[in-house]
Amino acid sequence: MIQIKANQFPEGFLWGSASAAYQVEGGYLDDGKGLTNWDTFVRIPGKTFKATTGDVAVDHYHRYREDIALMAEMGLKTYRFSVAWARIYPSGSGEVNEKGLAFYESLIDECLKHHIEPMVTIYHWDLPQALVDSYGGWESPRIIDDYVAYAQTLFSRFGNKVKYWITLNEQNIFTSLGWLTAQHPPGHFDDRKMFYQVNHHAFMAHAKAVLKYREMGGKGHIGASFAYTPSYALDCRPENAMAKCNYDDLKNYWWMDVYAYGRYPKAAMAYLKEQGIAPRMQPGDESVLRRAAAEITFMGVNYYQSCVCEYNPPDGVTPYGTMNTTGVKGSAQEVGIPGIYKNPANPYLMTTDWDWSIDPVGLQFCCREITSRYGLPIVISENGLGAFDKKEEDGCIHDAYRIEYLKEHLKALARAIQEGCEVLAYCTWSFTDLLSWLNGYQKRYGFIYVDREEEEGAPMTRYKKDSYAWYKEVIGSNGRSLLEG
Ligand code: BG6
Image (cartoon, rainbow, N blue to C red; front, side, top):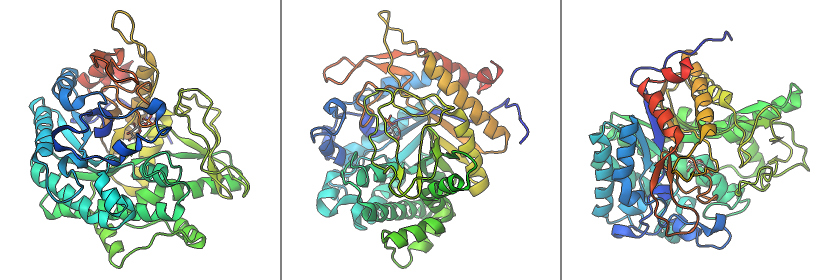
């Protein structure tokens, strides 16, 4: 491929930043909100770093005006946030909580007042606990109708103000961590059959919500956000090339093909059938998936890292190696599926303190792959660097490493755009510092430092990091500042 020098982001490009309700809001019992799976899970000893919770988080529920004013001053074009289902339906279904709707209405209005496009994630992992108690949450097909009813409430209340909808955040991650590695609720270990069944319910919920949106006359953008970890074969040994092929079918296309084509990849399905763990589908499901696939307008991509694929012998590593949740570099273990693939470290890439590889080219690779495989526009719904940040005595936070990370990823994105990928938006993770689900508050991602650590009771004052001014300049020049430098 010829090397094209990237020089421009499209006019109207949505420079953004993202958050999720549980990780920023706090106010976990305020104004009639119901309890969620996460409110329950974080109280199980040993589940989160230093037993951190999102009870208070960074108090966005009470300080959203201050946070949005900081976004406006920066010139942010879009703010991606999620709605907490349990604020709208405290019991998951049934009676609507008007105060919950009112909160999101004023958050949306505040964005619009500052010319910030609200991008709404309908589900970012916090499920009303009542639905778990009543029928096992995502384990039951009953969740499909409840999710659609909840989405419908949001569409009808906010449909005239919100033009970008994300149905599900990282279905691949919340199901893997929930049913395979037991690190997220409901904390099941190695429940592979249920894992695929839960995913089928989630696909159906996504698809029916997309169709409902169109049925209601919704003309905006709608799609799901996928945690895309693109893969490179370790080398040209055919068994490693096949390991990559199998990895892609099982770990990437299993989700993206359903969103974009409405069908499961054949080889992966054959493998699941042979293993006796393929999902049960109802008559008519395939048609719903296909019709919804024709209605999505973008592929949402949360990109953090790439991986390497190598053949894994039958007695090789399992998917259950230790994950680094402490920031002690080198503590993550290699994972894979015995007999199929494993993911060794990439010797050509640096890693973060949490052992995530740093690979800007991987972002370009994702965009190219989506463009040629699906021909869909792309929303980069998350990308960012989790790091230990230090507030100096004068209140400054010098996060040059974050600037470097974002700059290189944006340059890679610009190359993808030059090569023909249609990219609508780029959201950094995150705007303010926030709770990292399993890693407490010490793994920071924001442009805004929030003065809190793991213990509750801190003032939570907001401070601008160096990256704040840097991103402001990038946005102000529509990306030219980083491409000229
Ligand atoms: C994505 C999630 O997986 O990555 C976010 O959508 C999450 O909610 C982000 O916080 C970063 O992950 P972590 O584990 O570093 O917080």
